[in-house]
Length: 390
Image 1 (cartoon, rainbow, N blue to C red):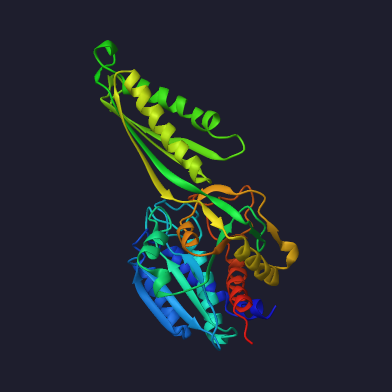
Image 2: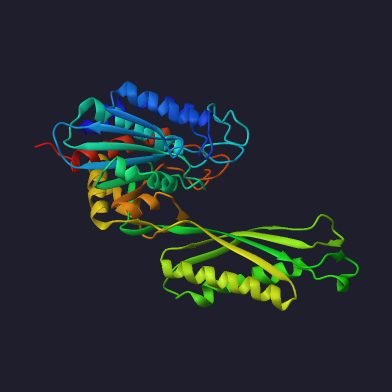
């Protein structure tokens, strides 16, 4: 198709951008170098307006088409993860303890490619806002951008994003109306008992034993409190306490995560986690400080926007390669904040990794540069289809 062919002309350049971002990863709200390069390239492409400093390191480019019309937003995330890279690729991270393990380097390069094409061709009527968002990983950069007036400063009717998905064949795309990713909460539980010598446990109140009871009991939160046809997850991933094998510590901390789709399920999880942890600690004569931090809401795709996005995807990769995602994922995504404010949709782009390859958030993960023109062409086709001339 013409869009894909034209963008394919600068595939090598997009690859170079992506691999440069990969070599120089920056964590949430630290994307100074990345956002600087993004802004510089947008200006070089002839984008009409380039606005920086939104949510500290966010960038928005404004591209006006030929004639009046509505406006849409296209979003990519820019931040990396605090992971020590083990990929061994020539363009591996040069910064120890930081890497692009989720493919945001690819997302940024794809949207830059789309911006270059749209600024060059202007084959649409209306306005396209290209949104380069900081701090998707734990920072809630989308929420910050919304709170700082993203949609007031840049009025738009709909907003769209894509995420690379390693387990899907390269270049295939998946859509889903309604919930597509889960709401996310962090759980912190600090149990305070009484320390003692390990040989004299009767002299203390062992928070390790209490922690074990709490972890076991939390497995009933979803199984016995959430309606079986609904989804919820409570996982404790970290237990920390004590400094010696023969000493009962004073405190033990638990860290975990909760996931859900329906708001009422989130309310149940928060209530029951708090009640169970506090109740067990009290029964043992100890105390538990329970904190349930709601991070991201559920990512919910608007049905109409999702249908439009799937059409654009089919125009790029063919109808046979665009299918409905059979079920949502319990992963979280802060694009949810933008979808709470505006109708839109979030699609998955296959990056063609096998079961033997490293997946997202793995120290050996690397984005598949072969799909860069596909993602860029999807964004471009979406703009041209939603904002047609004449």
